[in-house]
Length: 219
Image (cartoon, rainbow, N blue to C red; front, side, top):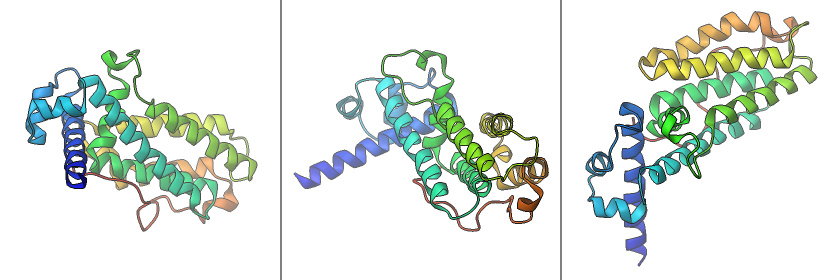
């Protein structure tokens, strides 16, 4: 029984990974269940045993991607740095996951897919969750006196959300947009305007030397 359960769990994970890769590369609409089952190396019958239809698979991918992003933000929150440094570190961890993890890429890709919007039980809005987290961190930074004079948390949140979501969208076609170099250059340009002068010297725009923990799957 235990062996059967382990085999079933591996098959389910293989199907989710295959679906994520197909959704990220080709989009939700063109991807077929036959394509997914072939990529996973399983029969159509095995696929239907685990997932009723393509929407069911997409919900599973979205849920896994949401877990990965929440782990990134939780890990950032556990660091003993300033709120701004936690924000920088989390953006680097997210971009790294978008580059390396097909599940995270697909989760964001599915957010903007028209046939997915409004479907019964559609998955988590990853971009919305990311925006709310950034907004909360920047309000903390404002309360702690970390933002430059005249910069509001709302204004800062708009700028950071627009940039990071833009990098995510552009990174679908060109991985340089989610590279450490691109994001570091953004922070080098942004921080002198965003951070209070006494905070600036301590901030590291290229993020943590060690990656924030979080689930990842092969690209």
